[in-house]
Image (tube, rainbow, N blue to C red; front, side):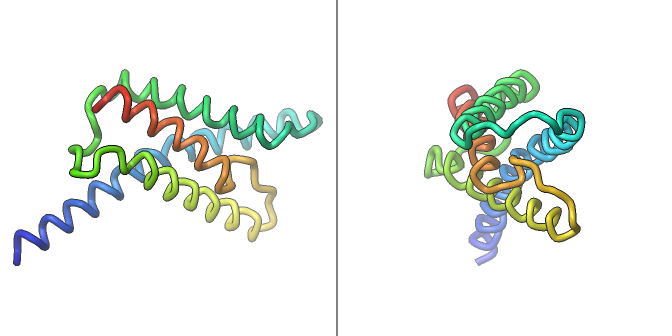
Length: 135
């Protein structure tokens, strides 16, 4: 019974570690983009599809950089190889959406990455690169 509990606890720990490691770079870029937006507030907003592609490519770039810093998987591969390619971006997108709601609730303007679709695109790009180069 103890082994089952430890296995479940280990699996949950792996999942949360994966989410945290994908949300942390998003938060850094969130602060950077918030600063950039305040500096370039006169430029018009780009098309939503182009923004999603841009955040995906930004996630790919961060994923490549993370492979140089940590060339091994953050967590050990599980029986369901590649499941983090879906679960982590979903969790990251949800986290960024929640962050956007909290920012708007405080009367501030949320930036693009503080939405589900752009947070998901960023995390998916990062997870895709990490899956390809580290497993």
